[in-house]
Every structure is written in C-alpha cells, then in structure tokens.
Length: 301
Image (cartoon, rainbow, N blue to C red; front, side):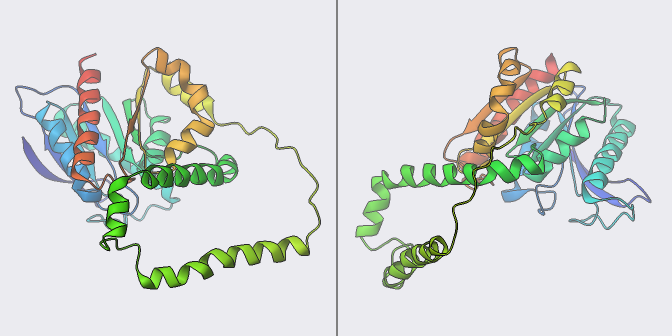
C-alpha cells in the first residue's frame, strides 16, 4: 500500500490523498471519498483514512480529497453554487485518477452531505459504476419538510426506549456516576417540563381550530434511482441506527426501492447501536468491513 498527495483541478487547487493498492492485488476500480459535512478529508474519527486503507489492502484504490474551500483545498474560484461545484470537483478527481492509474470505473463513497453529492454526481457521469451512501438525504426539500419531524420523533423514541431498558444506565444513575443526573439537573426538571406545557396551553386558548387540509402526494424522486439502476449502477445504502436518516429512508424510499433490493442492484445495511459519525471503534470497523466487502464483490463482478 502506498499513499500519495495529489493536486488536481483548476490551477490545480484541490488536494487529495491517493491510497494505492498493492500491484499484485489491484482491481480496475477506484473509490472516491469526499468530505463528510464540514470535516476535512481524514473524515470523522479518521474514518475516511481507515476505509481507504482497508480498501487498498483488498486491492482497490481509494482517493479521498477536500472540496474547494475545505481542509487543504483553497477556493477554486468557480462561479457555481456549492452542490454544483462539488459535483464538478468529483469529476475532476476522476479525471486525475484516470490520468495517473488508467482506471476508468469509479465508486463514490459519501457520508452525510457527501452522500447526497455523490448521488447527484452519479446521475451525470457514466464513469460511476457504484455508490456507497451512508446516512444521506436524497429527498426533495418539499418532501423533507413534511417527513423530517416524523423521522426525528421516531429516532428519539427509539433512543429512549432502548436506554430506558438498559440496566447499566440505571446502575450509573443510582450509584451517582451518571453525568446526566445531578442536583443541578434535578432542580431544573420542573421548569423544563412545565415550560412547554404552559406555552402549549397559551397557544390553544387564543387559537381557532384550523381547517383540515389534505396533504397532496409528493414525488419522492424514484425516477432518479431508476435511471441509475437502468445504467447498471450498484448501490449500497448504509444507515446508523442512532440517526434519523434511517427513518427518512423508511418514510420515503424503502417501499419504492424494495424491488431493486430483491434483484441485488441495491444493498441495504443498518449498523445497530452506531451513531451518525460512528464514534465507537467497533462501529468504525463494522462500517469499514461493510464497505470493503461490498466493494470487493462489485469489483469482481
């Protein structure tokens, strides 16, 4: 395994790290790893580094880079909105890897906002043959506005149900070792509980009953997914149990994408007990194994 710092793009202004696989194991696929939210190219908890190196040990090149204006990459000077600029820069990354290695097939990996960027980029570039999308939004803003409160509520209920039944947390509380329970917190509880109730009652007293309106159906954008699958793109959707992204998926896409799971075009994975940034070391390894096993299988098919 060899790691090289690569400059590319306009001027060139973007910076990335190419993790090359051993020549004896090399497969004709490279995984492009872009920024997760506002975190630079090592990724949250150095997750991108771990995934890139594990991919390389399996014979798959990995290239993780910073979008312009993030990490080691200065602003590129392109007059585009952020999403359009990111899609352009993923294209530049693929151009550079092809120039260096000769590889022409790519899988795009993205966590959080990078999942949406990777999804959008794949719709426009035929060099993309695979997508590894972790905890991403793929819905329209109109649909998100409608289902996000429901998804967030379901996530909170799941969290509290699980932890209320965890005897280890009760032991911490009664032994005085819990940081969440203190005299300061206990004194604040009546105000925390009473405040929302009082505000709710005030609102109800001076409010007329709103007229009931029917929610018109909103297109979840399945045509975009169908376009990808028609091109033969393999997709892996990964979700952490501790985030609301999995609830958004089940509220908007799951039923529509079920046929593609049956014919193996789409793989769905849930990492139980993991949070959005995969903080525990075991969760990081579980994610890296899930990604690498899928990429190995797809690179051979």
